Amino acid sequence: MHTHQLTVPRTARYYTLGTPSEQTRDLWVVCHGYGQLARYFLRHFAVLDDGNTVVVAPEGLSRFYLDGFSGRVGATWMTKEDRLSEIEDQSAYLNLLLKQLLQQVPSDVRVHVLGFSQGGATVCRWLATERVPCQHLILWAASFPEDIDFESVKAAFEGIPVDLVYGTQDEFITPEKLQHQREIMQRLGISPQVHTFEGGHTIAPELLARLKP
Image 1 (cartoon, rainbow, N blue to C red):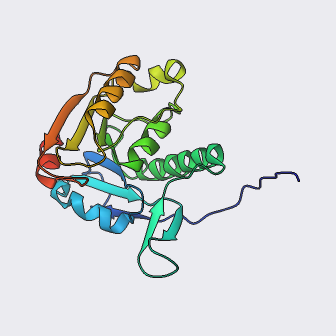
Image 2 (image 1 turned 120 degrees about the vertical axis):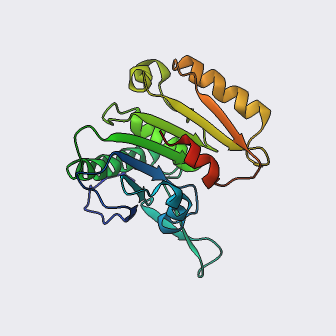
């Protein structure tokens, strides 16, 4: 048996708050977590919609039923199956989306990238390509993926302010995991600002508003 690959056109879906224009000062790219859909995820970011900010929520390319064979649907950025191809596909997708958006806003727009949960690993892999003009990275209930080549991608994160955010009742966050993440960031030369809130595995709009420059 031989494995073959074929690159095909694919329709990707994304949602926006605000309209890109010459008045846009801040552009946020926010990537959802496992099993979420972008249109619902984007609702958490209404607090950023001030007339000068555009928030775009791309949706993972793979969708599935969350329970059985019908009902609610969620999306995922990747699985362990053919993972390298999926990583390349998601980076190509996000690069194309950002390129189109940047053509509609001033050249000095500030680009903020936020990854929530699984979306955090996605945006880290994306930024590691060194093709993303990012001025601010937020990892919310998220972590750097273990498969990043820390030495070769260190330059990609140089000079980017990083906010690390998590809820104190988040069942996926443990002291051991937090310590491990700090060690990873130290290897990348990152000294994040750490923020916590009373809550679980979710976005807290009040804290999000305070992270906006």
